[in-house]
Length: 62
Image (cartoon, rainbow, N blue to C red):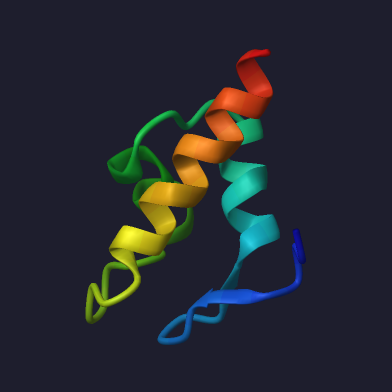
């Protein structure tokens, strides 16, 4: 996975920034939004962010 790829165009949030939020303890979309503000402007990327959160939480917890 390209951790430099931008997932939230509105705020320039990358896959890596989502991973960092999960690694720091976030486990839900809402917790990631609190830490990064990703998906809080237009919301178009929320589904993509949710998939990333699910992926990184599973990776973290294994």
